[in-house]
Length: 363
Image 1 (cartoon, rainbow, N blue to C red):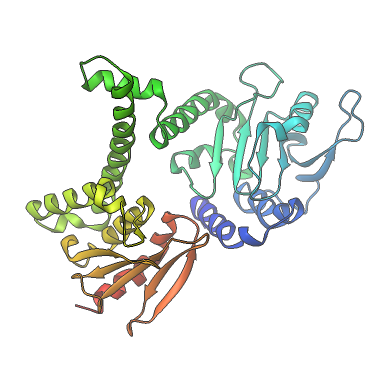
Image 2: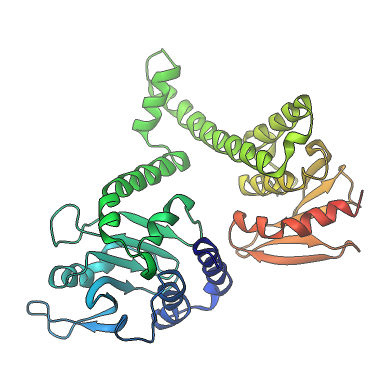
């Protein structure tokens, strides 16, 4: 398997098993050891390559252990500290990494809960681990731009100089991306004021601030949806339709997430933004088979239905999002629904063929 494929396979395993992993030891066995083995390429059963419970005396701290030390060319190169799955990864958990980093030759430290991996080095001061990671890998949402840099840490192509050389740029680009993502989710006052000044020439009063806070949040969501839809349509062949038809479908997709009617409660039914985004994904998937205008959503109290031709007898999929465990309902040729648990909207793509098959059965 290629490096990216092995990474995707591990991510799928994490999604499938995360609900039953309850301890740090289970996290190491199920997630971290496979990461060291299949992604980084080191033999976890060879103490000349991977040393579990690595011990080094640190000042007055005697016999303190770190979860794993990865050895290459006879030198400790990477230190790994683990926390249990589902526990947020915080820098406060890295006290042992800080201490060990100063007394070993390691230039790379990893803090992980088996799902998110934070990579640290010593950019700010020599032989002193930085307080902020230069690379963050989230197996629940893999940033493909980081894969080439991550591969440099693997045994076969280990390139420490290249990693350290790129770390500074990676660190700040990563922080900027996370900052932008946070502003898109929940814009701060300074961000709202900055954008408001670009489009509004009047005084920035309290009323204007309140108005534009909502507008900035809404515009951000719509912009992201527009970008996602454009990429999906290109990837799934929507360009096969005429430009006029594409323009209509684009307007329909981009306007729905922010339409007030879609997000209002009526007769006890509350359509959420997440349901609308799930609908957009399904719609983009099946647009290789039918015109997007034929794919219609209809919300109900217990599920969110996606239909062909607005016909209850032609169900494409159902979104069961009004519960702690989300499900997507997939229909077979007999219109029998199978509910499949999902943990993120991205997992809908894993059922592309089944969703398209549902549509083909009605044609």
